Image 1 (cartoon, helix red, strand yellow):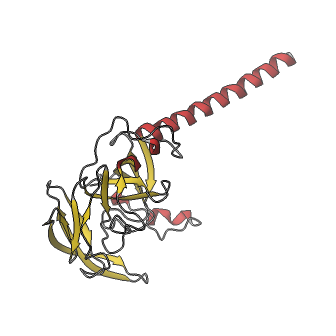
Image 2 (cartoon, one colour):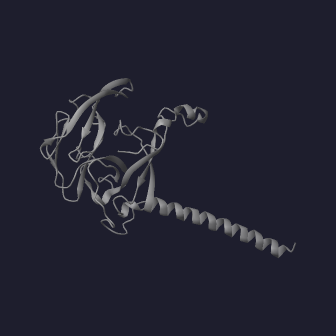
Image 3 (cartoon, one colour):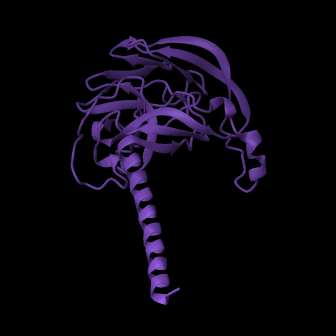
Length: 252
């Protein structure tokens, strides 16, 4: 074979490989920016709804698009385009207002203009207590990693949506009695379902109310889940740590 022809074929093959890799990366960026972003749960603030080791898809289109829909959040524009307001009860990923870069995930409990308070562990919305029904206890861990049973409740928001919360410290936790928070225009009040183990909008110094612009997307479905005790260095043990019953669960 002519050496020039051989070199051209090799160069053509290399260029085709580069094009395929570039196209694949471009598709991945578009999907992540416009459609879905994978997200994993690193903390227990949303137990019992979401567990440490859950991996889920967040829909980027649910609330429209802001600068934070784009990887690294470049300041290419302000506000949102194709905006659709979050609903009370949504579990949403947002950028922490204190630094506009850290990803947080919590439940929307307060809409713009709402008055939010917690009295004796019971969430109050606009002066009315949210319906709370005691159900079977939940097994979790305390501050020292010991397994304990804690009260679990079914909460029903005024709109009729339901979810479960736990009270690790009963109704005497640090954030179980608060002042009244008035949700600012264009902001949302976020809380975790693990009410005594969640840094959320109740803590104004750390989180506070979340501007609509900071929302990344709505949590939709768990696509994988593995127990937090699984070891990265012992993959042969992974099958027994995978939570098969959580695969493809819708999030609500």
